[in-house]
Image (cartoon, rainbow, N blue to C red; front, side, top):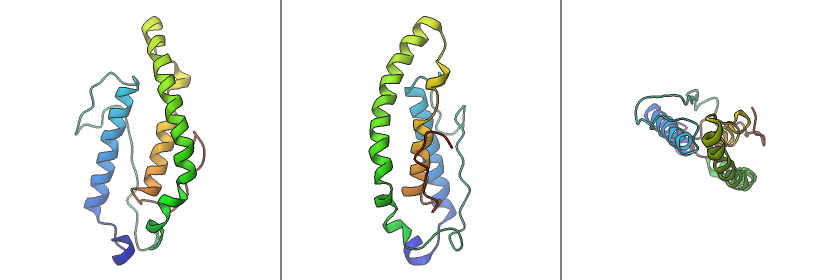
Length: 136
């Protein structure tokens, strides 16, 4: 729709945002960052929000054709970071087992970066290229 009609329907935006919110709740639960079973409708401890873009002024018509290609460096780095995140989750499991607490330094980074890349390359809510950084 962006390419042909220069429109981004609100219902499509809402569906994508809620689906990504649920996926984040599942990821956080699997990564042992939250003990609450992921709900399909409550927002729980994970908060994710994107502003609804004005397709006429904020989004470029031809970018959906090449955004996935421009995000390839992110895919490569995130592939290795997700492997490292898996190792960190295993280490965190032992830390939780022995100390009863999740180590704070292991708590953030990769999922935030993944969300920025998804917002750019898949959800098409921004034309701003995501930073190659764990923070931001």
